Length: 334
Image (cartoon, rainbow, N blue to C red; front, side):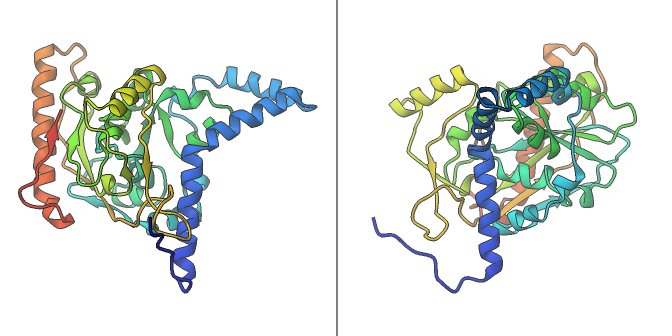
């Protein structure tokens, strides 16, 4: 394989952008393991009492990820996130007003490999708060990550909360409105479809978010992130292949998927785990009004789910030509 090295005379700003993305990759892939290892070292070393104190804190604070988390405007406003967003770059596109007197459930599509668009737009400031003043976004992620010592504090500071039913209910139950639950509908399973050019969404059987919106009267908002699947290449894993079967079995056991992805490196463009510089344009659609129904029937859930799919498809079709999607290509729902 011929290695393509980066030019020596690259502007300093682009180098800083690459470093910003590198630290994000480290945080996403290795920081949780590093924090767990550090905790074990504390327990086995001379500072075991610090580990005991943290365990006490963990016990007392265990429910916080399900109760709105503990965001830090300081962390969300770090300069490193500005360079992170500029690397791709990441843009948030507004198509309609979202009245801050209501609560909203934003369905984010597609998952991609590492959900870069969701993090850049909803876990860092100021993209979302500038476009939608009065609304506070909460990105829901797998509960398992909030069991990692120290790491849980970091991700909560960015505005991430648990994806459990209790957590979503807490966010959407805000009486005065102004809350926006952001849920990556396809989940970890969808990351296995995150190949460049892929438009397959795992959504036909995912109706829990519809039921939550109905029970809380939260308006539904489809969100499509153009470019999300273009950031990495992935080892071929068509459905039915041996690799895909192994990945799906591991996903059921561990709760998260393991896509075998690659892209570029820091000083060369041929291999590595740094995502490609591909623009991410996250388009926020118009809200679908939802009337509160504490005990929705299966028929009512299916009806709203069908309407959501219709609005999501319409959003994609209206904007795909702006972001290089050929006219003959459309979303595939599975």
